[in-house]
Amino acid sequence: ILNVEQSPQSLHVQEGDSTNFTCSFPSSNFYALHWYRWETAKSPEALFVMTLNGDEKKKGRISATLNTKEGYSYLYIKGSQPEDSATYLCAPNGATNKLIFGTGTLLAVQP
Amino acid sequence: ETGVTQTPRHLVMGMTNKKSLKCEQHLGHNAMYWYKQSAKKPLELMFVYSLEERVENNSVPSRFSPECPNSSHLFLHLHTLQPEDSALYLCASSQDRATHYGYTFGSGTRLTVV
Image 1 (spheres, rainbow over the protein chains, first blue to last red):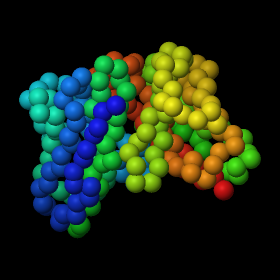
Image 2: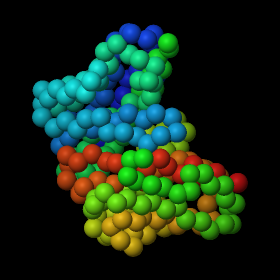
Image 3: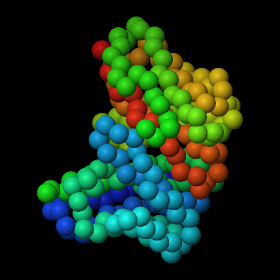
């Protein structure tokens, strides 16, 4: 069973601030790392799937990096907006597509 | 809408009741999953179905009984639940069980056991 840790647990920023948070996972038996964005009362929404060490993915103001050797991924949000407020989940998976989720980082962006 | 539909959205049931949660997807996905989220805990995998066959039962009590009659539908049958089973139950699907496919989630069923 993979042990997935996300930090910080919660984050409050002002509109326009840039922010980042961390996902740590065991580096052995790694196949892919998934990031999801989960707004209250909605479905978790897939942001990125990353597989290669050194991968960097970008979607608008959100980007993510991956270090499989040391077992971590960073998610960055540039110029946070109130609509970015959500819980951001990471989930590594091993040989089968069984995602093990972290507890998430709750981001609140104040206008 | 994500393409994965869960019904009902909310459910209140007594400990002696029998109820079912339904999940439906028409995305052509071959794998479907049930997850549970309790307060302050991460999403917890319950069951995995691939091509309508259960491939994983993650030590879930027998009072939860999944059923996958075809590749588009997944049910979770509930009976004699306990108050601690109150949680958000999420269904998800993926193209197949290959490692690089992300999941498409439904909006969940908020279950309260009284």
